[in-house]
Image 1 (cartoon, helix red, strand yellow):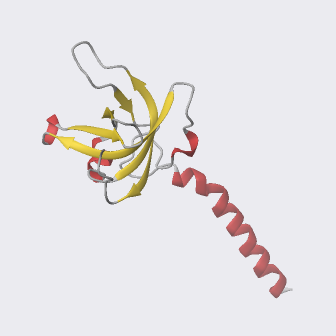
Image 2 (cartoon, helix red, strand yellow):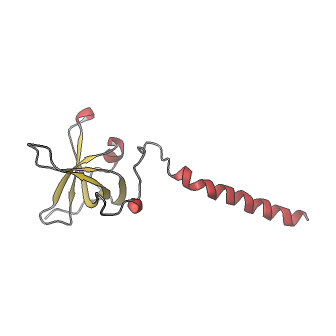
Image 3 (tube, one colour):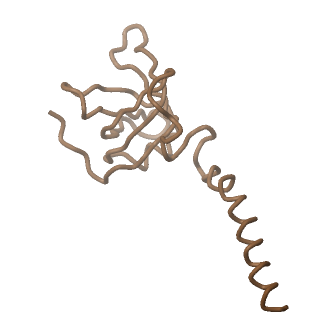
Length: 130
């Protein structure tokens, strides 16, 4: 009887653990609410766009701005990034895939803004722009 109960208890424990796993994975420390580390939930259309390129930074401290150059377009399309600065700072100089809505450039500005709803890390290096 003892040998039958132990595997059953183990199976129940794993079921409870796995049932709670999605909730635990959705709360990554330092990641703002509504931002995903995997853009599987962000599909093109419905106001969302997918951009693949290199993240760059201008300025320091509170005046930092982050941008991405979409390496798939010729010439590369530039976007300012609106999202968690800690997350973006980590990926400066990396190739990433970002999903989110694009806001047209403000009056007098040349660069539209891409809201970071999802970010997927692609590479530690950036592809040279054409």
